[in-house]
Length: 105
Image 1 (tube, helix red, strand yellow):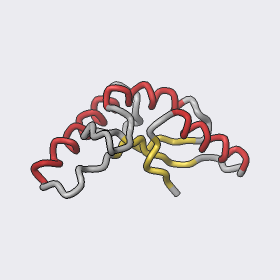
Image 2 (cartoon, rainbow, N blue to C red):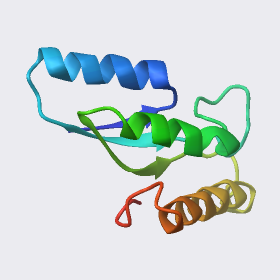
Image 3 (cartoon, rainbow, N blue to C red):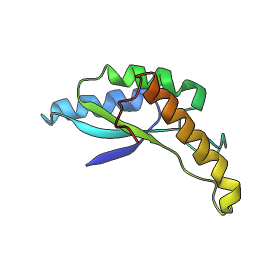
């Protein structure tokens, strides 16, 4: 089981609390990043991702497995490629700095 849409601390805290009530040890999650910066998309802004990850890492039951994003709907590969490239670069930078685990995707 994995949740791929954590984009704020309030949601992460609610899930962590629910896991405690259910007596679950842990749950894998992905932080959703809004690399396209579209108002219609959910996700933490790229420049705020590091802070959110640091806060979520303080929760006992959530294990951050990596970052995810959603591409622009109906776009061509050339139009969406920059969003995924930005996510890859952010993920690498956060792994290199130790904010994300080395095996994060």
